[in-house]
Image 1 (spheres, rainbow, N blue to C red):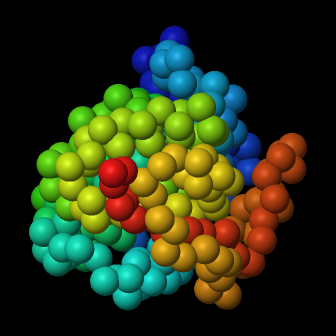
Image 2 (image 1 turned 180 degrees about the vertical axis):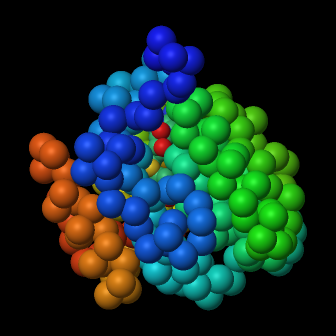
Length: 249
Ligand SMILES: C[S@@+](CC[C@H](N)C(=O)[O-])C[C@H]1O[C@@H](n2cnc3c(N)ncnc32)[C@H](O)[C@@H]1O
């Protein structure tokens, strides 16, 4: 907090820092826009230094990847499946998942300011009658989170580097050891896919470029072109992959 008692916005979330609201926020009355560089995401946890950045997923990429996942014949019905966004940020993917018929939707986010905003966004969504299932946003490190003993789909939008990815996968391998097929991983901007390849027990079901819609592409390009230090690149697609936990003999 600053001297007047107000919480200061994270760098990248003010107009002065180049913030341009994404149409998703303008149309829906939520706050999920902005780009916060990884170096500004300081929660006090040892894993902070592995954080990539905050940036909300393009809704069109989310929907296309979910459609692809639904066509992979998941082991359980969607109504029995828990959706978990690992590195939920301000909750854009959580909001989109909350409109689907999952058993429940959980956002796991390390940074407390992003968690607060995500919870406010969920409240807006709920008030608008758009939350179809139980939804919560938990402040936790992804590699320490206790995963529920239910069929699970894990969503990741490139939240962290290889060190945390490896720790997360080891934890998942233990938690799902006796439940082959009960865990799917949907990975957007899958920079650490090689870590998944090395972890025994995961089969890749899909790998490819998922295009943004024209509107999302224009919005994200405008936001990324407006970065003060031009650190992150924009492309009209995201490299994505879908993985299924098959278990280890
Ligand atoms: C690219 S953003 C994705 C936001 C959201 N998933 C979406 O699609 O709109 C990645 C997020 O991962 C979070 N993160 C990074 N390391 C984390 C960790 N170890 N545990 C939990 N969250 C983490 C960051 O704070 C950031 O908000």
